[in-house]
Image 1 (tube, rainbow, N blue to C red):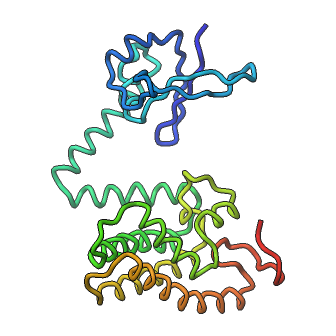
Image 2: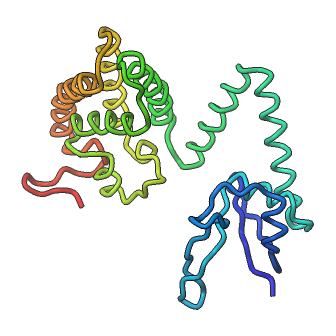
Image 3: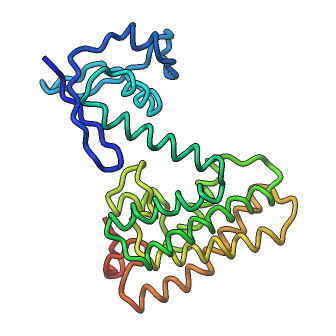
Length: 257
């Protein structure tokens, strides 16, 4: 009996029926990047229809797309066509960097509009993305140590704590988001604006410094965020709105859940 499988590409669902997957053939044709402690292809326990957790094979996104190309079924022709179209677009973008930039912007704007975001929010989001990149670059140039994703996450938390008195994890919880969700994609426009201002000012302050260590750079970010946070708090009180989440302010002593 075929197992139902629905793949979603660019918002379009493609139902596929898989009768049987030969693991030996599959793993012989694809390079598996994830292995368990005994060198076998990685597996995780997934809740099955009968309510029991059963070991299930795990593949990366790249491996899943390669698997699609190997399925000899007319039901996946639409997905193969989609892959060919995306591949052709990427080749064109490689030849013309300007085309690549505009293509990414067009796709991003279209995605946000499809989510019902107004143009003013989209503009604030895109400007924030650019400022965010400048902020990360400024950190890398000012700090003598080699920074990694953990440092960037800590610097971002300094921005959030200074502005909103909460970390990214707390804000995600208040907005009922998962760790895979981009927090800023779910924040209101004023939150994006204040976060952009804080990162822009921090970028300028970091640019005025040389040979900082990580602790010193983090302190600069914290100081900037706290100062701008006071202005954000005044705006929040004036509008009676928690700018970070867009929710009404709660009486003092209570917290958002």
